[in-house]
Amino acid sequence: MGESRLRIDARDDRVVATLDRPDRRNAIDQALVDELHALCAELEETPRTLIVTGTDGIFAAGADIAQLRERTGDDARRGINATVFDRIRHLPMPVIAAVDGYALGGGAELAYAADIRLGTPNARFGNPEPGLGIIAAAGASWRLPEIVGHARASELLLTTRTLGADEALAWGLLSSVHEPDELLDAAHAIVDRIAATSVRATILTKRALLAPRADHPRIDGELQAELFDSPDKRARMTAFLERKKR
Ligand code: COA
Image (tube, helix red, strand yellow):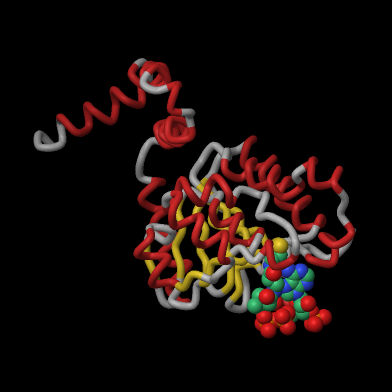
């Protein structure tokens, strides 16, 4: 077993996963992908909100180019990063990316896979893959258009330019911008809001958000049916209706 590339701070209602490979600017190699899969397995088993962040003013500089150079067409078809980012995307509870510094290539795609993105004034997003002779194949070509719209995503991916925090905020890629020493507190404040609501309703809200367009509105009714029949819904609504009587 080599050195861990992911620091995990696991609490009852949340997990903070810190990419921790600063000497390689948190480049995502197979070992990190394996650790992310292990984390996903845990969060699928025991759903909790996930905060993903970086270290030393860098989120992640993309896939590990030394490994990438040696990968073949068969490796590409296996979608090494795409698969783990998709697993992160589909974790039962929300995923928050807290981005300070560069989120490039696969690092940007990891952030695109989150439900909510927060940044600092130093946040920088970009997909430089064509400059390396490849495409951004781990979510950028379809998740980025979903987030910022097709025209903006096309401009970013075709020019490979880097997007700063102000523009990322204006485009809706970032929900909010915080000073670096306040970034994690801001992410925790969001988790606190989520934690105050029903876990099951949060899980089913995420499921509804990720459902294909063609499944709506049928799936919303199905998901709601489970909640309407739950004692938790009755208790929460009764508490609201009786709050003035106490
Ligand atoms: N894969 C492998 N190694 C990487 C890497 C990556 N994606 N990104 C950085 N590194 C390594 C560098 O090779 C360097 O190694 P060295 O110390 O042995 O020379 C070390 O990490 C530090 O990187 P450096 O470029 O010197 O840091 P910097 O702070 O000046 O610049 C970046 C940071 C992120 C702007 C720059 O490293 C960069 O452009 N990285 C590649 C981004 C990219 O193209 N990603 C897409 C991959 S598909």
